[in-house]
Structures are given as C-alpha cells and as structure tokens.
Image 1 (tube, rainbow, N blue to C red):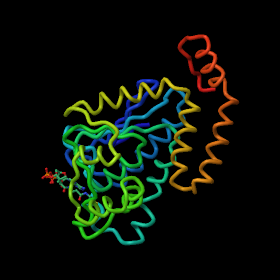
Image 2: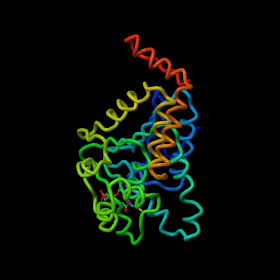
Image 3: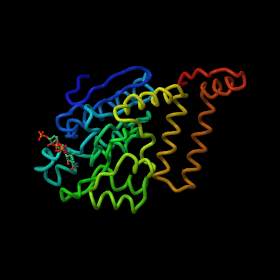
Image 4: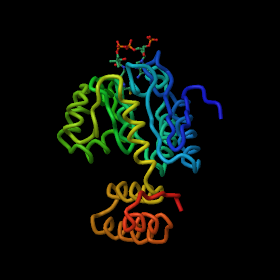
Length: 257
Ligand code: COA
C-alpha cells in the first residue's frame, strides 16, 4: 500500500517504518498516525516479519510532536473523535516494536517512543512533554506511561516544566535501553531487531503480551496470566525444538509454530 507520510522497508525478518516529514521534524498529523497504524497492523499480519523498527527521517528528529499547526484549530469533539483511535491500534500491535530515536522525541514523539517496546537512542536525542508550554497536556498516554515507567516525580518534572531530558537521563530513568553514538541509532536498532527476530516468534509475542499486562493487572492477576501463557507455549513446536536443541548442544531453528 502506498503511503504519503511514512516509508516502509521490509528486510525480512525485520521491517523498518520511517516517519517521513523531515522538514516538519516528523511532526505527527492525523494522516501520519493513520498511516502508521495501517502499516504496523499490516506488518503485524505479515508472517515473514518478526520485529519492527520505528524511526524518523533526517538527523534532527524522531518526532517533534503532534502537528501543532493542524491541531490549533480543532474543537474538543474533533480531538476526542479523531485523535486517539489510531494510537490504540498501535498499542495493540503484537510484534515487538523498537524505537530508534536520533533527535527530538517530544510530545507525541515521546509518547510514540513510549508505545514501542524497546528504545535505542543516539547520544544527542532529547525527550520531553512540552505540551504545557502550549497551554495543554499530553493526550496520547504521556502522563500515564511516564508515571508508570519513571514514577510520579520524574513524570511531574517533564510534564510540568516541558523541559527536554537528555538520552542519558532517560537511560538512567530506565526508558532508553541503549544509548549509541550519534548517527548509529538505526543501525543498532536493526541489529537488536535481528536478534529478537531470531527467537521463537510465539514466545516473543506472549512475552510482550505478559509484560504489557503488568500495566493493567494486579500482581496476583498478572502472575496467573503469565502462568497460563507459559503453559500455552508447551503446545508449540518451537518449545520442543528449543529444548531439543539445548539437549543436543546445537543451535535451535524456530519456525513460529
Ligand atoms: N508541529 C508542527 N510543526 C512542527 C512541529 C510540531 N510539533 N515541530 C517542529 N515543526 C516545524 C516547524 O514549524 C518548522 O517548520 P517551518 O520550517 O515550515 O517553519 C520546522 O518543523 C523546523 O522546526 P523549528 O522550530 O524551526 O526548529 P528549531 O530547531 O528551531 O526547534 C524544536 C526545534 C523541536 C525545539 C521546535 O520545533 C519545537 O519546539 N517544536 C514543537 C515541540 C512541541 O511542542 N511538541 C508537542 C506538540 S503537542
């Protein structure tokens, strides 16, 4: 499917989705988020793809936020009706998504990175929720995901001051998995994607599902859920192959069945 605002590159078993509005620092307008949701769902259905990298075009930004010019004239009901459904579609993608952040990840850009499952950032990347500077607040999960990920006080710091946090800070806070030298974020993210893509796909999927469930459940419910998913994996060929390979001291070949 041709997209206007994003690029989709398949290098099975990984795929890279690039938000391609470098002149606007990859700001997300409503078409971008709709195209992103379409592309990610399509890749989620593609059996040849096992891990997805999400990045921004150019060397200045991952995404510098929702498109302020587009947003400025919207009514409350337009915002409520139009803005969030596609974010929810992205949240429901089963395959792991790695955000490769090379520059600004602000507002909706920070929130998009927080929709990913792992974050690789260049040493010059900047993260933040500057909506407060526009007289509004985060609306695509920023307050909730930050509070759950970095805690109340750090979330307050970012959301109430609107300041830009460095990649180093976000790494120390446990949001950024790895910091890499300037310009190497995409390459490193692809390397990591390749590593994950070599694992048993159903086990990858259920690991992601179980970890994300921790945000919505009590510990008791989460533990019970994990136990059921764990048992379910004993119905797969990949479980038999993985354990046989260990016993036979050879490399496992996983098929996703
Ligand atoms: N929405 C729409 N356009 C945006 C944008 C956004 N969130 N962020 C950047 N742009 C556009 C600018 O309008 C400019 O377009 P123009 O050249 O047609 O005027 C272009 O991207 C480059 O941005 P510019 O502001 O000139 O770059 P800078 O280096 O001076 O500043 C930032 C970079 C990221 C600090 C600044 O662009 C910024 O603060 N952006 C908004 C961040 C934000 O508030 N995000 C949350 C939105 S809810």
